Image (cartoon, rainbow, N blue to C red; front, top):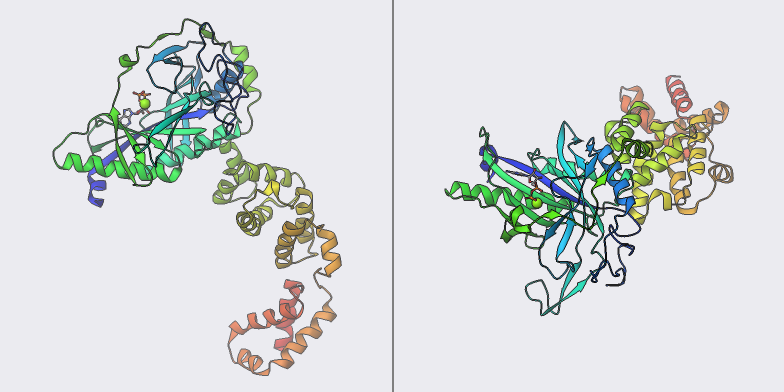
Length: 481
Ligand code: ADP
Ligand code: MG
């Protein structure tokens, strides 16, 4: 199995459908929020009543432009809509309005670890409804099907990549980075499970050294990062086995079955002419002026890779910066926090350590927690000034996460400030030395490692409050007497 990887190279191109976060549908006034009762987000346009006309939702265009700019694409000065005809019960009109040969965004790229993944195009289109197969378990065992048209007419931006990826890890990173960008610019919530972002995965293989691409299969129904990786790995082996046996991979659409961990043939690949595309006569071509593009450009927020660079420039490691940037709410919180004159590196250590562990356990986000930005900054300030030790600060942050109590008040109430009184500390050190004669003897006999034992005892005695530098110095002095 592993020798297939030595012999064949994977080639992957992805078509990502991102559901745009608009209030209403792309060509009608009906709402398009997820999770409503079936068939309540519908109306004359969604249901394709005779005589209704599509009216383009401007917000969809704004979002497509913003996305195009974030993906380094060219925004077409003119584009148009086309009808893509097919029959399916979830498509009341009998055709989907999409963009065929004149998409709104052309070219571009998404940066992954060490290369740029090319973007071929991005185009606007409407989603179809959803069939719910009921009556028995699974699609093929169903006794009847229901149709929910809430999703029909929901705006989608289909982002098509170049066949630039060469492993499942690269494909995963591409989708992760793309998803982050879409979330940061606020056009899509990027929820794979709820289907607000869907990736169709085209994969082919070729012997290393061969220039031409092999025949691709397109895999649908991958709705998590994990299944994306599993589907690609499965498909790689399936295609390699076909080639090994002297067969030919056929171009087709395959469905990923997550429970079984396999892909299976859904239908032969349809060609564009099967859809009988033609220009949508009910919509004017769309002209986008440079002024319009410039206006949208002004609203562009800081993008994830820019945030990454900024965090690294203020002292975070690449890894830490990545973890924070990958969670928008964490990044927003962190940005507020570092405005309050805290040391970014210390703040990130706490966030990635104690805070992250607590949030994971409680299944909440940092914004939802009781640790307000101001209170956290206060706590970090006490640490910076040397009023409290690092360990005390760590236990306090957990207490605040649980209770929301004020950092300063907690330190006072519990008497947690660092002891820097030399006289007080010397007494404690002398007592420890007197109580542990055998350790003292061993230390003096050359067991240097025992130094830590004395520090530990002193910390225990002071409940972690001894000034660390001072206690080290005093123990050394007393032991050398
Ligand atoms: P279609 O609508 O027929 O699927 P698209 O042009 O929309 O065609 O999408 C094709 C996708 O397949 C793109 O993401 C492209 O990068 C990818 N692709 C094309 N040829 C190959 C290939 N031989 N192997 C893997 N991916 C491919
Ligand atoms: Mg396709």
